[in-house]
Image (tube, rainbow, N blue to C red; front, side, top):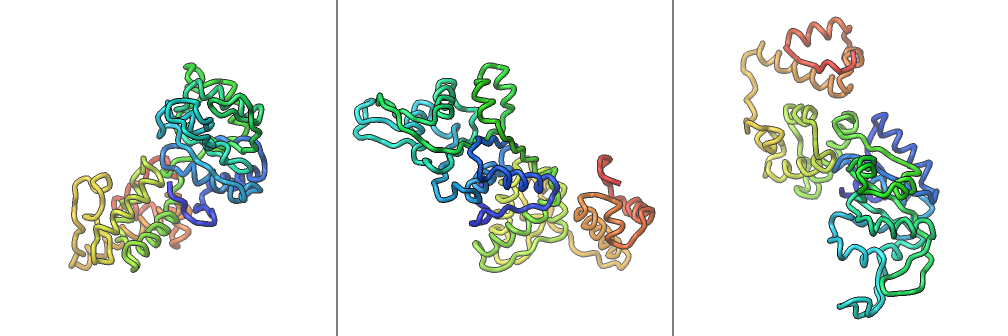
Length: 324
């Protein structure tokens, strides 16, 4: 995921996000390995960068490698480097990526894709704090802080024999679990506003607004791709709305607007217009309070019973697991 802010500030106000911020502050100056878990697109690399750039190692290099993005036969030489003549095509000595992170932080993304052979070499590196390039007999000391991440269930990988148990415990001295975006509705509001401002400026050089109905669809969508999907959707909408300054339903991707329905015109009848306004007003109040009906009632100046009557009258459904 892209870095949201150059200074590594993180966007969020949910309780879960506050706990993550607190953990970052506790571990940023330590040397102990950190393991970050979460679904794809939740921002695992962003958290790793925050740990690095806020901590004492910020003057060293932050080097990130996606273990699943480099072919296995090339990954070892990329990580550990090699000596001239170590294999066909090795025409010169090459420093590995781990050495480049000396005095800094090395981030291994999707570590569950690492082969057992490379897991063994990584374990020895963490234990001995030294590295040996391919084709060399001597070792080199390295001072690297390791942060790893995965969207796999590593415990199941250990049970199945695909991941070394000893390496698992070495890497998971400190763990940070990032909840999916669908469980962080308060953060969704802030992220939406940030990305709308960001891509309005970059793409249009002019502020673009999202209609109330589009915002409702955003809030009710489960975001299986998490923050990355949200970011891409907002960028797409701003491009597709063309010269207009308002993003409407027809600008949404099929996932958010499966029927491809266009925005309905405003009702001309007074009572229909009033009902439409009340529905949108109540939906926005519920979204702002993360569907906590008691908080929503207090915020808009109604009793709980008054809110419940309006929800029933205007046929606004709130999931059973929402707070009362």
